[in-house]
Image 1 (cartoon, rainbow over the protein chains, first blue to last red):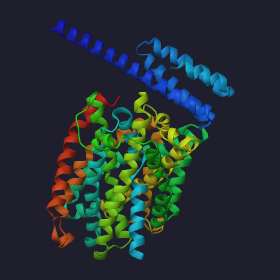
Image 2 (cartoon, rainbow over the protein chains, first blue to last red):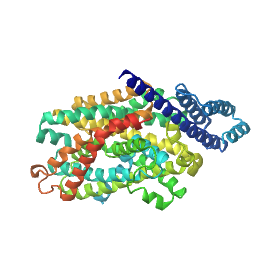
Image 3 (tube, chains in turn cyan, purple):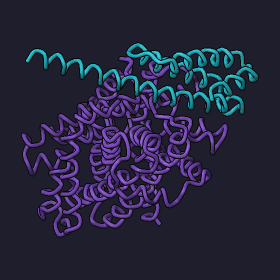
Image 4 (spheres, one colour):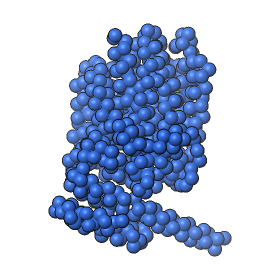
Length: 105
Length: 405
């Protein structure tokens, strides 16, 4: 009885870990595409720098929140790119934004 | 001419009143996650809403009773207490979500955090209700709400595949992530068939002194107003399906939904999204606050009326003040406005059977609606809505756990 209970708990933990990893994977794809649109929009002056910065912050906040439960190289890499994009947006450095935009592909 | 203007205004009210934080959030999430596959749920919810709103107006015009008032009188106070208490709890969440919507719109424009805006926005909504008349509130928010047409223009400009869009109106099983699919479907139904609309519409009809001659205008307003409102909601979903879905963007934060107009409208995209969100949520926050005050006053037998001075019905006025304060306080806790919206819409769906059930009795009772009782189609729609809402009520909580994310 106890063994099956432990097995059940382990199975549940494994499933939740798999779910968290899968969710993080989807979030990385979603935020990568979001940041691409924001970078494009910033390059075309379609959004204010303030909006772009807030969106980058939301991306980092969401990815970091999920990364505390499970690890992902993709998430770490995107968080790094987002930090650079934030700096480039703050400086209004269009060339750097364009370069980071191409790195996000 | 006066009748025509009444109908035209009613249609505009439908557009402005239909779209709010819940319908924008659920439609955007549906389009982003499942392309056009959930369009049927907007259509289904709208059909139910048209019939129920028309019945609410008919009941008010003939019997001079709003829904809450008639339920208390016909079915007794004990029957009225549980649904009304449930509505108050859900409405606090909805008001919080609507204040959150206005605050988010201001955040998109100014970059200042939602929590900073929560108090000024709450005060501004209170001021509009306190100082304005019902006509002023309806006209101003409805006409400003026409900015939502931007979604239709954007959707048309992006040339969606017409056949794929039309196929979306046929209910289908999800190809992936079924729990999330049904969770959003429930959210769309909750956002579309909003119980507060019955209280607001019916009480407004009594305040505007509708009578038997108003039945034609009531029917046209219900059908055209709600249909045009639904078109806006469909346009939000289509824009999300065209912009977010192909890129794999899921709406985890409102900032992602705010991007849907940019590819079609360029630099106007974000300001128009913010304006639509802000105006529609502002109007909806007023409507939900007033609807709760109407409902409570009618259930407890207080004086009520937005057109009267606040000191003439102090308890009615106090109710909307308290509701606004509770909604605003909810935002100050730091809760994510998008999550609050989705929970509020799902819980709205949970309480729906309790709210809709009395329609069967009231709209078939000749002492209330004389010869204008429901026909077989009307009764079928009410019963279908009750059955649908009951199924939704049972599955909502499990879906929220599994599919809510």
